[in-house]
Image 1 (cartoon, helix red, strand yellow):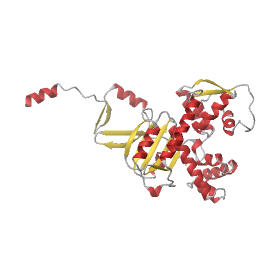
Image 2: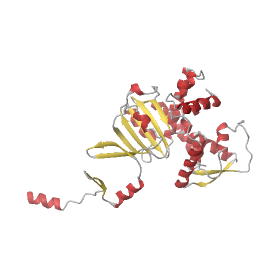
Image 3: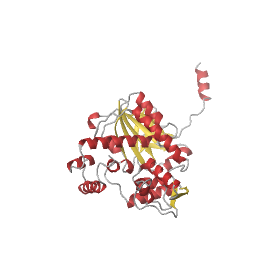
Image 4: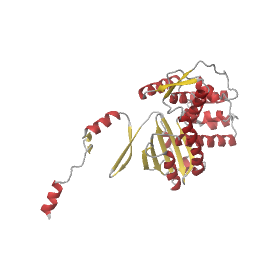
Length: 337
């Protein structure tokens, strides 16, 4: 029996080895592993370590990792690729399981964090300029933009850790019920922005310290998913003319109104002001603080009305350069709260 077992082991197929971890460190053992590590240069966090599983997540400057760490989330329970798992399927799974925890989603340069309590949405944050609380407060008409800009300037000057809603309340610009409306609107917009994603990565960390949440709303995830399906249908309609946010827009000869009027919305004006024939729609969306959905909707209407035309799809390298230039020219205001 011993001889048979030894012969069986000698004929067993070799197990592919990509990495070797020992007291000396980590050594790539295959060419595919070396290629992956060359592309993955930068700072990484060892997010999960089980006996048979290692999971790394990239550390990003200005990302949400530090913000979400303050909530004391537990270990990673689920992770994956949004190209393989649709956001609606992921959120429905977490809702049906009545999960408590923190979902971190990364798509391109944008990060979104959603906190779930018993499967329902309690709080959310985002690095997208169009999903920042200040921008949304102005969008729904709670605070004039000039007053918001003054509050943001003071926040930056003081290097204050006070939240924007608190500062606006202290100035008498925002009543408690108005702040609640704005927070709910922000959470819904972040949730719906996540639903229309076509790619990205996600991490769900099980558990959260409820006492550390900046706010606790209880928004029914199932109702949000139903609203999101309508937005998905709308986005698919816009994608018939604008296949992706990597397409570059350029102005036509048709003169545009100087101010919003009738069917020419403020979003259309803000987007058109930034169209230069070089930057892709994803960069225009960030620069105008509209977000991908609102920017795509405005671009679709501008195309339909003959104010802009599509030039083609930008390369990934060109997209990254445009994003870097846009952020250098216009630094983000406030914190992603």
